[in-house]
Length: 259
Length: 259
Image (cartoon, rainbow over all chains, first blue to last red; front, side):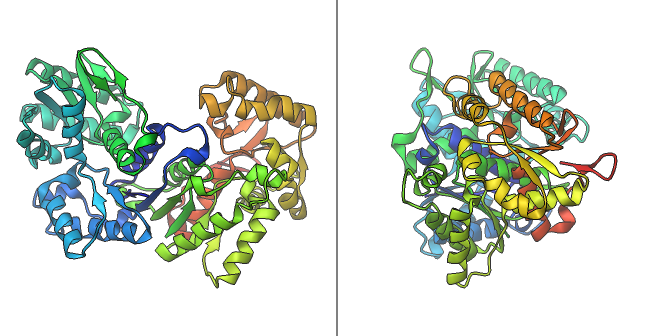
């Protein structure tokens, strides 16, 4: 049974549950994989605030508690659809806690799964660009995981990051958190960011914030593969629990496979 | 904590989780209500097959097991987003099982909540029309619950039900299960059914199958209030667990409030 820590944040949790259904080859209701989703958003403090030193409360502790609850309920493999929760300062603490509790729950690392996905399906790619919140960028969540795997991770200049990309998610007037999927100005800012990363040499674009796939649904952009980490995590969870039910990817040229 | 039996079927489960977020007045992730969702679709046999006597396996048993699992995990109130599971032959068995297990979990009855919603928000309504699968119609799920509350429940002639309404959901070419929300022919058939029910005197239309709200998103149709039982259930679950977080309804004229 798949476990999902769905409260960080609740919309990302819902999106992962949706993608678990979407990536399953099922003809009837009964064909779908078993999933327990645990959403206690009020118990999980903001991840970025912790990473930026604005609070000393590590969100690892409630995340660990909820993972152990999921294991007790019957989950054997689990995922956390939140990019920032995969910063080492948080995720390492979760893993230490699982070990201390003698847990046998397999918690997939979403960012490491993105690396494995790129290696397996886009073997020619060496340079990836990341669109994310400033928290994920400052905590170097993607470089810390992908660079040891041999990828060069490209990010945007600080001014672009703080005045265009972060506001595309958070701005109360035009941001995705305020408007949802119909946020044309946010989409334009993100596409501009993708174009800049393309000019810097990016061969793939990682949508490194769970809100971004709401406004960028293309599978490739300007010749770059588009990688949605939530969808990669959904596929990895199905692969670990019911590999025969995993939908095939869309094959492209030169050995590439697209989400 | 709210519990959701999400596997009957999994898309309806996802829809309820979505509507729980949608009906919560929340400014941040942390404001959202706590929800455990338990989806084990392969364990829950088809409800309609049981009601029509095609199988002797009562889906009440796995539904009961999953409700007790939710209670053990911490849920205090729960819902089952499946119209057919509320047929007395199934739901009464669930309630008996909960009593035998000395459970204190409060399981809301989705159809009874629809009745309470109508009484509280559309006090002038006496006659309601139901659009549903043939299973829900034959099992008289809505009349059995709503008529004792004083409502007259109108259904479509059998031919219309079996050749237009049921196929609008199940047809492999144009049905909602096949096409999702972009199913224009299914929508047309359902609107035709709503018009027929209007001519029979219906003052409200109940979307009595969890697929129908995908193609009918209006809050009123031809002067009839549109009632989405999944959204009513979402609101009832929030009301029972965190009433201060329930979003207000849309007020209309003559004391009516719309979903």
